[in-house]
Image (tube, rainbow over all chains, first blue to last red; front, side, top):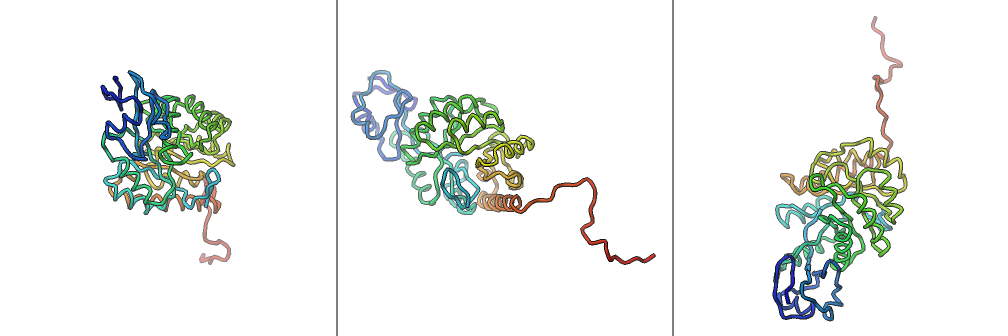
Length: 65
Length: 257
């Protein structure tokens, strides 16, 4: 399945969002996720089924003004 | 003490956390400023990276309130999604709402701002809108559910200070009961004191402190200027006059000729 993760192309075998995070070595309570511009809550990642062409954003706290 | 959305805050200075020379200087500047609210953002995390965790750990150790922003968002959709992601990560409904409309001036897209504010207020967010000094836009933001307004006084990071005093004065006069925070464009402590003397409730700044030669010293200076401006406003300042008025009593002066 082809996905865009934080603007980079990936070809992965994972089917859920939580599996994708684990496969790409993303872990931690400080991460927020969105798929195709909509928030996916932490609690929903395990059952969130990804589809070919999905765009995933994985964000974390950063300095800001 | 003053209140923002029912929360009492000891300092009227809100401080950004970006562009400091090091995390240690950021921490020292926050402490020196006396601020009780700092702004933060969300950005892409690298695979296997822990930059976000380190920064988040530092901020939590400072014991200040967090005001996440939607900086860099150019559409309502981007801003709303970013706000929702921030609420989940930072565990607060407070959001500094930015919907940028112009790449050069970074001025708000006020039409998108009002729409995003309405969506977020209806969703239970506590919205701090970064807006212009336009009174009509301000009224729309209040109607959308905002109870605090954050007008710019000059473009973000410009350090120009208040470039339109008439507009700021007019806004203060038009919304006497609404907490008004000057956000963006301040360059010097005297700028902060000036807008506080106008009766603004607080200021939010970042670059002027972070990019100073000594950010910790500048943070302390801004903290003092904000306090001085507020105390001056509350103490009743003298109106300027076009003629001289002697300060020393004229009655009883000696006559030598």
